[in-house]
Length: 378
Image 1 (cartoon, helix red, strand yellow):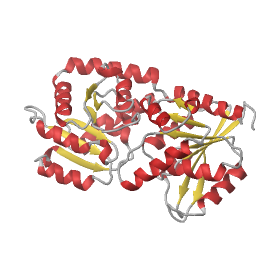
Image 2 (image 1 turned 135 degrees about the vertical axis):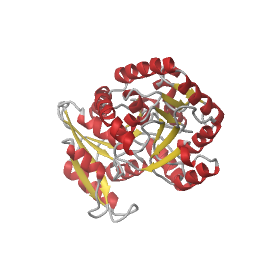
Image 3 (image 1 turned 180 degrees about the vertical axis):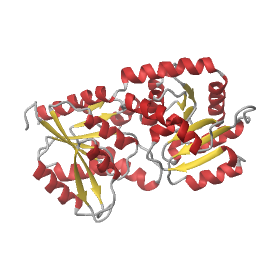
């Protein structure tokens, strides 16, 4: 085992995009203390571009590209075992079900502590539900499991993960970086979207059933058109339900009020272009988009799922709606748009709350304590 002033940590995630979870990992590593050495590793097919690893390298973080012939390459276990054995990290951290399973199979006989950071489960289709169920079985065998919201602890306890191995470390962001990018981008991006004179609602995230964009469209259809400024919903993200959502918007007569922008690599700029942010999810851990909206000083309307109510101080820092309830969401959006004084108060509360409780540096210290603890027991 490495000494306590030199702990090397591998972070493994199966993603070649640079979205919310990947930004989270990079921010964690970038804010580490000198006593820890961080490596970001991910699976890669051929010489295809890898936005995640490239973004980590641009922040000065060491990276490892783990070659795979396909997503289900049977050689991955051996290749990962060889890479881990050669690098000899003190801690292995998985950030999704594929990473957790492969680390479990590759490193269980190497004596290296294994940690999983559970960002949440989507259950978006039968295949995903199978692998998520398998992941929960793997978690019981790991040395530590980090959850990002208190609501996830009970679920893991019910699934048999020992209580003394579960650690609550909420998601976090680089608040100053988010707010600076959002402020700088506002005017140019609104002009590019041709919404300079519109009230812009932004929904930022993967287009997938658990994210509840279908409920949001139903809520928007229940809201009257604004008398003075057009109300435009902008959806940033892509995914399996895009076609169905576009068809739903047309069916509801919302074609002129909804923009589907697809995947973008500038989410913080998009927050700057928005007048308010809405998160209509059916299930969540603790969404980064929520924390980033609070840092960017945008009013937030979100559903009561996962760690959202805690982040919003049960409504002090934003408006809360019932999940999967278009009427409740429409009412919350209408209340937010109607009350400028409430918007200002909740924006201020949100900014103060995210700065005090959800900073990347604070999260990095908490995770380092977990890594130090598991190495001390090894």
